[in-house]
Image (cartoon, rainbow, N blue to C red; front, top):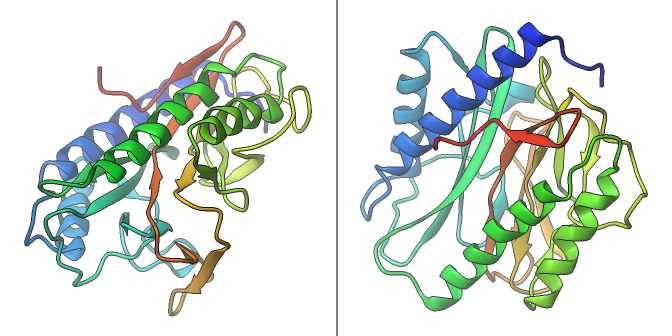
Length: 252
């Protein structure tokens, strides 16, 4: 990816803040009895009211404004009439386009009281994302990120999804490099200063093969665990600087 100019970095920062604020807002409506369709409408209204665009809507035929992945859904879950119930875990993935640039972030949310297994897996995914981010160095490699994630996750007894991962982001939604959740230090695509990428490990309870499923009218696929066990994911958009990194999708 081509390094961003200073004014483009400011736009990425603005898009990142917006995505983070939207995610936090929508997450406040997660409760038993709410449908994922309702969460999607809440996100759409929030984003449009701020003169921005929900990036997923219409992207390669994707029909909704956010992704809502419940329990065993790994990613790209399509909001629909699914009613959230006590004990569910849901990943909400928000991407906003503001002034032509993308901010992309996701988080796990719990519905009522969840099992200990749910919180443990979610905690692992959250920490794994930060382990990956902390491995970012200018002119390092994506393998550095993947190595850090994989090492942490496997030591916790879980399994990082290898087929899907993070990506370059900026004026385009998904670009190079692919950011895996496994790898070898010093291997893979270089991390260029003043470019942006997402770090978004998807962590499964078991190593069962994942299932790829079609979305009607779209070339985007959604994914589930092959054995119905749980999956968890967190995501940040990150700017690689000349000395380290800056997380663009945090609200603190």
